[in-house]
Length: 67
Image (cartoon, rainbow, N blue to C red):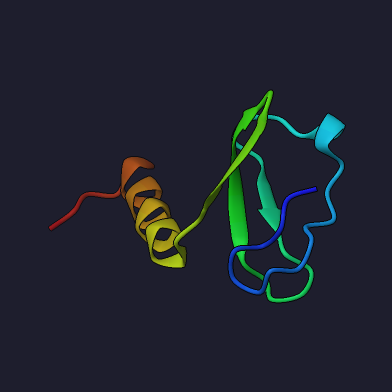
């Protein structure tokens, strides 16, 4: 079981049910990780600022024009 890179607590995850692109959240500190690979399991820390940028891009892709 991998450990959280922020608080070093074990991440309580079911490795068999994960797919690439899933988000795993640390129960202790709330840090988020994206599943990059499942065999072997590889996680990448998610930057909360990156999520905000992606949501903004999706908003504009849904028919809204940027001015």
